[in-house]
Amino acid sequence: QRQLVESGGGTVQPGGSLRLGCAASGFGLDHHAVGWFRQVRGGEREGVACITFTNGLTYYKESVKGRFTISRDGAKNTVYLQMNSLKPEDTAVYYCGAKIDLCVPSVRSYNYWGQGTQVNVSS
Image (cartoon, rainbow, N blue to C red; front, side, top):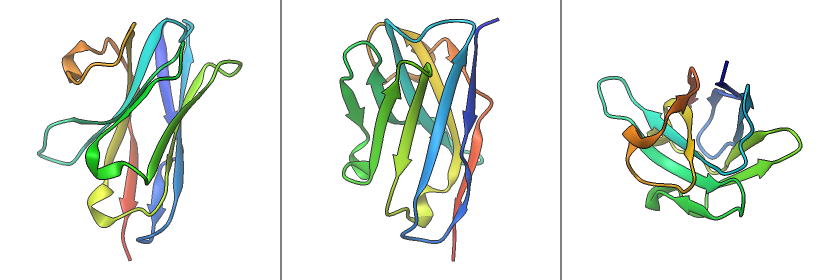
C-alpha cells in the first residue's frame, strides 16, 4: 500500500522553527515530485514548496521564500520542510503530496497524500 506519513508539527512562538517530515512507504520517491501544502479551516489547500526528488529542483510560494527550505533524503525515502522565522499566518494543517515526474502548481495533480500535521504559530 502506497502512503505518505507526515511528522513534526506542533506549536511554536512567532520567530520559531519547526521541521516537518514526509516519509513514503510502499513506493520509492525517485521519479516523483513531492510537495508541501497547507490548509486553514474553511480555506483551500495551497502549495507551499515542492521538490523534484530525482534532481532536487525546488519551488517555493513567494511568502515563504527565504524562510522555508524543502529537502530530500533518498536513503530514508523522505522529504523535509524546514520552517524558520515562523509567523502566525503560517498556522495551518500541513500536508505532503506526491506525483510522478515534475512539480506542478495544481493540487489536484498530486496522487498520494499524507494525513496532515497541525502547525500552530502563536504567542
